[in-house]
Image (cartoon, helix red, strand yellow):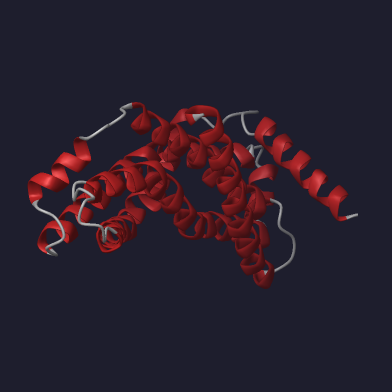
Length: 248
């Protein structure tokens, strides 16, 4: 019975994606909606992303340094490990899971509140495609999500540099040498491909849970929780699949 419910939810999700582009809202209205979503989803997320990235990068560098107990192991590995950890996994995946809590809960609760207060029904009565009106601007706004991840990469590495050098674990030249050694440019491409996929997930799954929720104010909170769980699960699954496809 539970399997049937999950399959019906997955089917409804893909039907939502199909209906998303039907009867698009005119561009003059859509432009304002997109700018508002950029402000709500992208700009408002910069503070928490910068804070977390900087300090987690520092922690990665310190943890790496403290585990290099053999004096024969070169210290430049601190920079190497920080770069690999931040670029490959921390920035695209870990930040996306955090954003599933911040962005995802905001999207689900805002759309869910509109459902509870019958604003979505009012849009439909006026002949507006409510899915296009509510969800499509979020998808377009989150095309800028790689910009957030790029900042997270830079601040993660910079935080690792400051922690490593000023913590006395590595010299500046050793850390920078570690950042440069065996650098594979495709890793950056891989990270941004993952980021765009995660951005699509962050825009659509929380919107789905908010749009199709039933009940009152209490159910909005429950929908936000369920949305966070499923967004995180799908991000982790897609992370595994994309890593297998792109790096194997």
